[in-house]
Length: 67
Image (cartoon, rainbow, N blue to C red):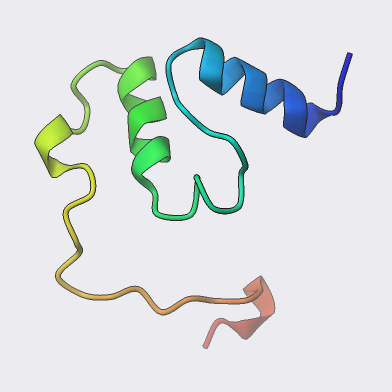
């Protein structure tokens, strides 16, 4: 058995979510939305996945940096 990360990647690909690495392929949130739709069909309309947010999110480097 491989590492937990590799097992997760294999599982995601086996259910039809194309992820090659958890850093870049996961960072825009589209694949997380696709995963949620696999778990609960139609939760997020496919035409809404990838639509930019009205307000940009401020990236945080760690939990300790919250205001």
